Image 1 (spheres, rainbow, N blue to C red):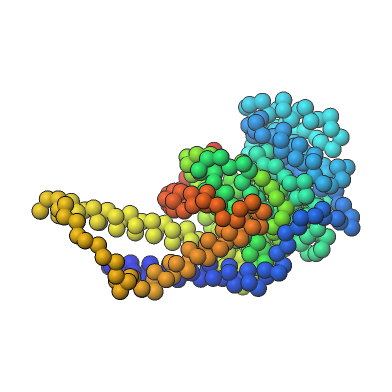
Image 2: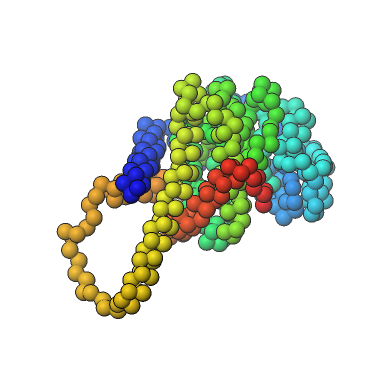
Length: 414
């Protein structure tokens, strides 16, 4: 039994190394294509874009969200802003009504039906060739839209462009951990963009050609992850999705472990269940790296982390169990042996080196992601919060997402 468990451990370790090396090689092949613009971007033409802001109990942030759209470095007569109140029970209605007099803003109120219904109302009312969404707890950089639109101008086959989402004003240890996670995500999402394998078009400010929805239909509920499902649908129909690494969107993140757990549980549950819904694309070459790499490695990563977490818990429990037996047999032994360092006894098994390789490549992804995000200091001690918080809590939401998927239990939104 022990040998079987070790074989599983080695396989999972190999796959972890494979994924990180694959991303690193992708970076080496495409590093010259990563452009981080500091000056203003100019377009040949400025197409009209509809931006929907779905609101549900966002009285504290939605005004700032709207002002960030009004401050975009893009002709305001070309930006149509729809504020859609999805049955809020707080003061959101009154907050967004104050913007109703602005010429390029329209305000809608509807009964609560979920974010996807608010987006579909926006689609129904939209008359522009480009369409996007901005979550009501996020704020866009003034250059974000024009930089995203430059991708559409460059390539007529591009059907959607995802932004670079970064953490807005982190204050708590949990938020600093998420800042590091998002920085790493910037790197990985750009690499997935190079591979044509993006699996989510984030709610904060992904822009689509309206043709996508005309051809493939509106948003779906999709396990409360409609921004993931539409990316799956696009990949299934071979629609090109790009990532604009310097179109910054700043999002508020959970400030407590409990709220972070709920958010990530919903995301992982959505990933597992959308993957089950689209299981027919898995390992089919005609769907490219999305089917051959992103989805399988995502599933493997979830089960790998869950397995390794379970093994650690088992090993720790096993250790203390035998310590209890030892205590019952001989009592406590307070004798401390002299410690002399001898490099001869350093563990040089290949497994240890593989772990070092994995963590080194993860650190590279984090540091380069911070560079892409234009962080003042590429290295910060706040980065170190990521490893204990996500190392301990992430396996819990992975395990819970697997459990909920097996029993068809939907996680709550908040």
